[in-house]
Length: 391
Image (cartoon, rainbow, N blue to C red; front, side):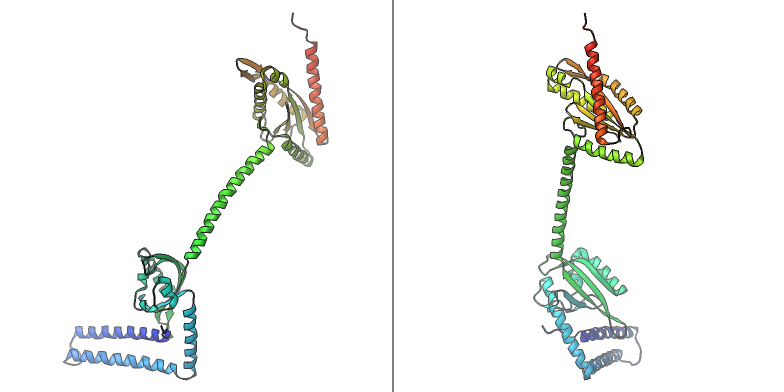
């Protein structure tokens, strides 16, 4: 289809609007009655005809003059270029009058809505191409375009010829003539079905990735706990203790504050395992571990050093403070009573203390606490050996 000249379309639009206004004026004059000539019908027909001829002559002459000379040639060239751009545009470009009726549509407009020809649009209301629920929204944005002069990238659900809908993005502007009078709307519409499909896929992928990341973080947390915790007692393991001891030593050195290390050994674990079985031995270890966790502060660190040995780091604790804490634990441990198959067993421990800055390195602290522990164990053994057998 040959694309019409848009300037002429706008001219015709203005001409039609003026002609309708003139017709309304003549009809109103006739209804009011008794002016100028006695034959009122003939009078008003003559007046209407004269006005129509006059308007037609003015517009025809005006556009004929524009087509002459260098300006006319340039205008024709510009118009050809403009129409070529419109026909090759991947987007729908359409022009409506101020009531929203199509007066021009490019080829992509027909393709977008599933029509065979753009001629099927001319004269139709643009509102008929919006889904029913979108008509109020379309009317609202038409009003905004009239008021503000332009709207950009507004999403609508539009209709195809077969009744199906598709998502589209619409931008529109108000067209004014050389006198600044609004004459039409121009709208650029783009099918965003593919873009929304890709966006939905990306959102789904992002949600899946988020869920996977959450699962990975959970697994990392579990692995981290497994890496730093003793599986039997739930206390920190030796690896975590070594790192914590380095941090505590660095902090104490920096702040010039003391801290103490308690090396603890559960008494007679081998005897419990041999006499009652490992179930009882494990229960004893768990009970002592729970006591230590319950009876230490948040900033203190309790670790299973290995086998039946524990190491406790007491934050900002002097030797005297550590000794008091040790005495408290010793009283509490007496309340532990292991019951297994009608057999009862008690729990006890031996412990040694070493304090920074009395001992000035991590190795020296552990060695001193270990030595203090074995000195205590030796004293207990000696005491047992000196105890006379019962009569």
